[in-house]
Length: 441
Image 1 (cartoon, one colour):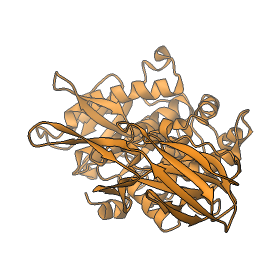
Image 2 (cartoon, rainbow, N blue to C red):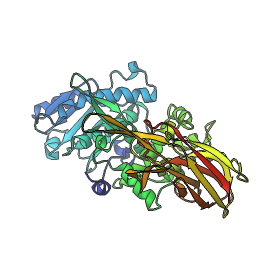
Image 3 (cartoon, rainbow, N blue to C red):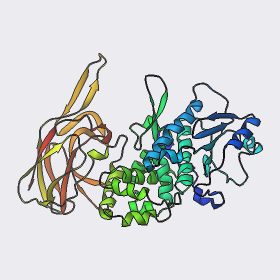
Image 4 (cartoon, rainbow, N blue to C red):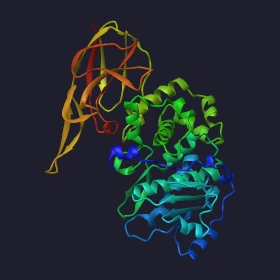
């Protein structure tokens, strides 16, 4: 699907808190065996695994991936339990009933779609039971099923009553995955909280939406995400909630605190407890989150994008700084004064990836500070040196200058940051560094 189509896609994933009559209390898990028997009597197809009974009226079509869903659900279930530190013995008997629905009336007639279940477009969850409208795209169908599976587990085992940003954000986070086909040819669940490739998450469009929002100046701050309700028909809300959970769970400066909060009660005070947690730095989290959303792309690697926000010392004379090719924004610790002019010059050569040739040979791509026009990223050649400052009331970094040398005017009084231009997901195979000299004019 093209980016524009993905951004237009209306994703409706059930927030159970909106339907209190169908809220299942912790431990109150429906016995799925009578329901499975009813499904078989009605002539519906039943596919089973340890943790999922999947009922569908979708015809058996070889290669559509439906027969693999219960096994993949079990593999994902094990990952979800590890995320929460759940004892395998305590959840070993847990089982959900999922309905993959083409014709809703068939499920109503079989007693598998009660009238009390609210109308849904794509999916709905109540306790350990959930319903997913069949999808033409197998990747998106599988994602919906797993998203609702996370709801089912957290509601019944963790007594989930959290703010909506966490309720939907954690379901999106834990459901995001790719299938890894091994030597035996069997596709297996591989969690990818931040997907490496667009093709792994067809029809989601979250990263594209967040980038479009950033370009339009509509990025939500972390506090705004915490306070905002998740609209049932707004991909923006799901994207922002997923990004917040992915950030908190993945950023080295905040992951430990967030994990500690997740191991506690998952109730309506989760956001407050996060803010009160020892070691929580709200100001740094806000800035780190803003930088994450501004730079986000497929394959984003937190370890390569941890930012030193130190103010450094004033740039009163000549300073030299090494710019690593395999890192995101790097603090020079040289603070420029707003409105002052400065000079910069960069030397050196770095490796910025590999290019496979038609003859099977691989060519190392090298670049100096002006970059190479063979590939472009965000409107500039890859490998090009970027000099920037962080503006707190704007989204992301403001680039002041690019290339091998020149002059720029400081936008604010604060440190200068540098990096080479490259997609966040392509930094791992970079090598070397540039040497940058900075000085007042």
